[in-house]
Structures are given as C-alpha cells and as structure tokens.
Image (cartoon, rainbow, N blue to C red):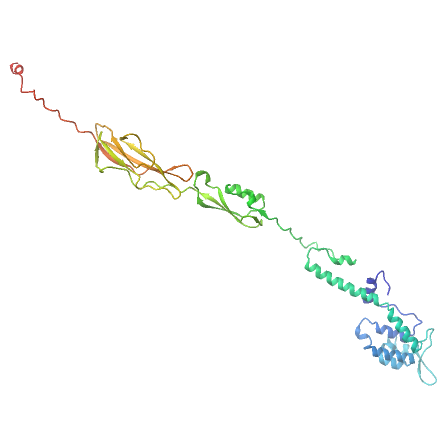
Length: 376
C-alpha cells in the first residue's frame, strides 16, 4: 500500500484491498500470499505450519498437496478449472508441475535467506506500529476529554479531524460570582434600602423580619442583624432583622389619693397627696419622674420633682361645693434614649366644701334695750 503518511498507509491496510502482485510471481504463490493477508481471519491459513507445508509443496511443484494445505492456492480469485490449467500441466510421467515463469522459485537456501531479509525489512512493521500508536492516542484522548470537560481535545495534536461541537448543546453557564454581604454595610439601613442594595448585587431572595424592640424612636425599622454574612452565592436567601416598635408604656394601675381618704375636703385646708404605687417602666428602662395633674388645689412649696411620690397640697377656697380632681403619669428613661411619658392614670376625685362660717361672739357690754329706746 502507498499513502501520504504512515497513518494513511495503516488505514489503507485495514479498509482497502491490496494491489495485485506482479505477473512475474507465479499464480499459486500469489494465491498463497493473498490468503495470508485476507481481511477475514477465517479466510487465512490456520497456522504457520500450514503455510510451511503449502510453501514446501509449491517448491516441489506439488500443487495438490499445497491446495490441500491452503485451498485458496488453487481457487483464490480464479475458477478451479482455469486455475488448474494456468498453474499446472501434466508431464509424460503424469506428475503435476508448476508452469515455468520468468521468475522461478529459488532453492531452499535462497528462500530462507530471502525470507530472513524480508522479515528484517517487512513493509508492515512501521505501518502497524503507527496504527497501534494511533489507537493508543485516540483512546487516551477520549479518556482525557471525558475526565476534563471543556479542555482542548488532545486528539487535535495528532492531526486527525475532531468533530465540531453540536450547536444544539447549550453552553455551560459561567459560575456566579459570590457576594461579600459584610462589605455592603446593610446594618443600620431600612429594609427597603437594604433590599435594593442586595438586588443591585444580584441577590433577590431577601426576607425582612422584626426582632427586638427599639430602645429609641430613631432605631425603629433599622436593621441590626444580617444572616448569612461574608461571601455568599447570589442564589442564597438573606434574612434581615430590624428593630421593632418601642415597647409601649402602660398607664398606671392606681389613682392618686389623699391622707385619710376622706369623702370630702374643706376649702382652704392642707392635705397630703400620694401617687406612683401602681406604675412601672418596661424592661431596660426605669422611672425618672412623674407628672401630677391638679384641679381644685395647689402645691405647697412648689411642684414635686424627680421621683418624689408625696407632697402637700392646699385646697382652693370656694364658696360653694366643687371637685378636687387629681391624676398622674409616669416618666421612663435611663436607657440612653429620650424619656417617655405614660398615659395618665384614672382620675381621683373628691368633693370640696366651703369652709364653715364662724358665729359672731356676743358683746358683753351689750345689754337690753337702751333707755332712749325705751323712752322713744
């Protein structure tokens, strides 16, 4: 076989029929050679011993013995009768002999030497080596391509044609870039602002929930916790926790009261007023003061201050019955935020009665009627 490269020659040996031998080679010898290189293993001689017997028979001119060993010697490619006529003729002694040709079979020694030389320089050697190397490269390249998707195909280095990628096969999507959540500075933002910032960085799975109560009004709605933090995949869900509304302050559960708890008080009198027993602040804050509302009285010595819970009041002077009405509210603070005032307590009310009028003292000098009166 001939070809542009060793690979082409090797492929031709596999796929193509061999060219015919020169006509100077006797037909039986041609048939023996063609049988030895038949494509199908079943068409080849069964063993080297069979080939040796056929070759020796051909050297002796015994075509029948050669055909028994390798039947293709008599029938390979030519009708049996024609082959017999072409290959043999019957002598006077009735023996079968090979027709003379321009190239007669050499003697035993010459055959052995020539075969030894052909073995040394057989044209099959390098093509077979190239074929084996090609198969090894193809197998190795296939395994490498399966284990390394997307890497360059090593088969291209052998000069063979690699199939173009299937246009229907989708390209692998690039790996998404991770996002540094901590670097975004979400704490202190509102939920809307933080959600918009995350969306700008490719994160859309966001939940925002209320957590601890705010300690001041300006903390309400501000984010104080972000989970997870650090570098995350854009497909992860980010949970934002913000401060809830401040804990409300409950109204006092009691009402102010005055000493003795009378049913009425006299106008102009002084009594002691107490408050604050039923008030407390939410956890985290403490009582910093009270606001007491008076109606129908005034403070003695000025209004109370700080956490004072008892003080004297003077009942207003009235000429007719009226009402003393008192309520109070607690003030909470101490947590670093602005103080907050509770709702007012229920009203304490008591009747104010006018002060009793003093009866005039009798004049000891005053007697009965005067003489003048009597005389008049």
